[in-house]
Image (cartoon, rainbow, N blue to C red; front, side, top):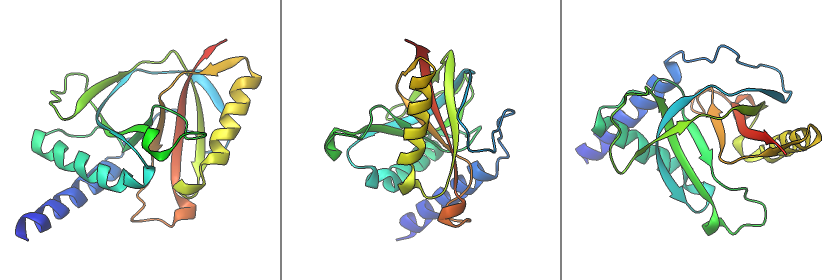
Length: 183
């Protein structure tokens, strides 16, 4: 019981630390419009998962616990990484990951891995609202990207910019980042 309570408290501290870190991208967009721009390299320490997105809260808990065990310090907010589109897939076919940005020289050990994210061009969009209602935002990005002669290069990233424990679902801000390249 004490170990469980300690783990829960530790996870809460890590979540609050990550969200309170003040990590904001210089080009932070506040409007709900699709923006195509040059990508900037960064590194994520993450754990990969498969199956229903309903498992994400438990996955976040696992990642937080592993961050603590490894003594890693996030340098940004929580990210979701999505390796395939859910349309037409069974839940067990979904491939995704959860992680945090880390310094380039971070020593990330199994069961986590370090992913270098270095995409030349990206499309971004600020989704405001519940996580469960993100599909129209993705559709808007994909339609815009297609109309500009680009194609999507997975994985897609979601940067969770505020804390779901502190704001209402309709106030959640999620920056969707999709790597793209010219057709």
